[in-house]
Length: 180
Image (cartoon, rainbow, N blue to C red; front, side, top):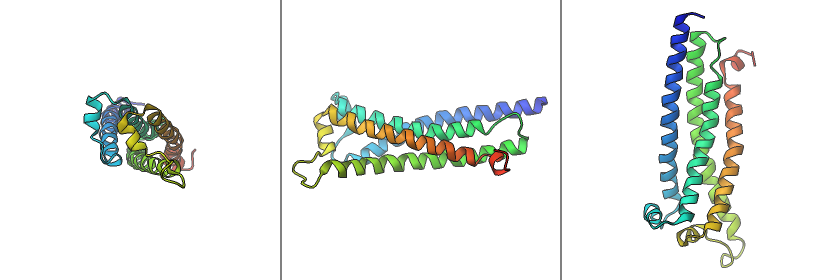
């Protein structure tokens, strides 16, 4: 293991750090934009300024859920780097890791969107007069509804994160070469 290997490793580590920061802040941005799309008729920023805890809880859960799933992709990217890889394999591993991150972000957004919509269908019930309109309840500040919605999103994100991490391990250079 020569000095050039150490330098390349440090460069990849720095790039991972920058990518991690970018993805974390990207998760926040995407979470806010996604929440805005899901909650038509609610001005989220105005509700936050008013101190609407229900809106804050759900927005926080969306951001956390996206970051949780993306973390599975970041972990996969980090795990593909090991001392046994050549520089070429490290580059291939890095490209595969980036592809995993993009896929994990898409999966995070898609699963959160689907989870909210499926939950909405479940809670409406057969007779819409006795069901729950979660978004009206959020606007009213119903913390109980926000906690229930947040719990669903967090549970889904933990399951999806495991799938993303597993996918990352199967797409590592070692696995593709038959070594894992």
